[in-house]
Every structure is written in structure tokens, then in C-alpha cells.
Image (cartoon, rainbow, N blue to C red; front, side):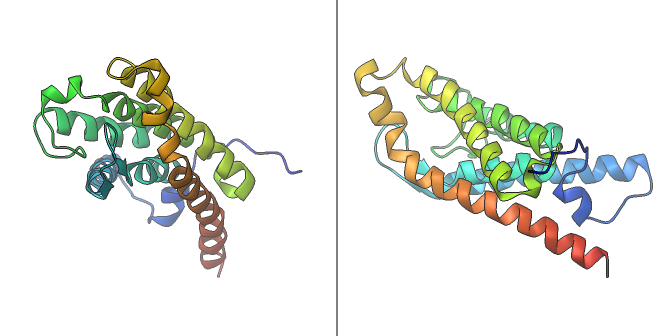
Length: 198
């Protein structure tokens, strides 16, 4: 098995043209962070209400934010999403505002930040170059969404029903998102490198 070589470049760095100045790099990073915050907000609206915690497409945006942007930009995109929702923008699945701090689903949003940073950190080290390691990174990130999500949700539901309400209904969907993202990323690397080498 090949070793995973440390690297600071992520997919978006290879995909986008190189910028010449620090100011251009900052502007590009701000645009990427804002863009993925908006993508997460859009995916939050793709939801299916099943009870206390809705099924949404948000986690797919979170996985991609970390994998494509890297640890810092990925995490900042989710911090931007969180702060935008808390100041009242209707970015979350059920609206926005500071009252969302008392929502049963708030812990999952905190988990978005942890997950995108973790996935980005691994992808900076080459985990997104191979299907097996990309899927492993996505699985680890997904667990970091559930950890604070379930801990916070436990304040609102009984321990007996915690997994039934906040974990089991999402497993199949999350698995499909992980497999999709984990399969697309290595393919994207191969295609971009082939195109760049022509």
C-alpha cells in the first residue's frame, strides 16, 4: 500500500488558477468560504421533516467544504454559516436567529465546524487521493458531526430515544453521501492532473 505523503494543497488549489498577490489570495479565500457557507445553507433547505431532527443535505456540503477547501477554509465556511444563522439570516434548516442556540439541532451545526476542519486536515495530507482513505476521512468527519449533535440533543430527548431520534434515521443517507464524496474526489484529482499535464 502506498504511503500518504504530507501535502498542503487541496483540490481547489489545483483546480483554480494561481493568484499573483496576497490580496488576490485573501479575496479568493473569502469568496470560497462565503460560497461554501451559502452551499451549506442551500443544502439545509433540502430537508425532510421526520421529527426533532430533520433529514437534510447539509452534511454533504460539510464533507465537501473540508475536502475541497482544506482545514482552515473549510472550518471558516462553517463558522460563517453558524454566525450568519445566529444573527438572524434564515440559513438553518428551520430558520435562524440567536434562539437557535436552544434548538435541539444546534449541536450538529457545531459539529459541522469540527468535521470540516478534520476532513480538511486529512485531505491536506493526501487522504482524498484514494477512494479508501477519502471514505475513511469522511467517516471520521461524520462522527465529529454526531458527537456534539447527540450530546446537545440529549438535553431535549430521553437517553433511551436519543439514537432513535438523532442517529439511526440518518445512517443510510450519510453512508450514501460519504460513498459519493469519497468516490468523486480521487476521480477529480486524476482528471485535473491529466488535464494539467496535457
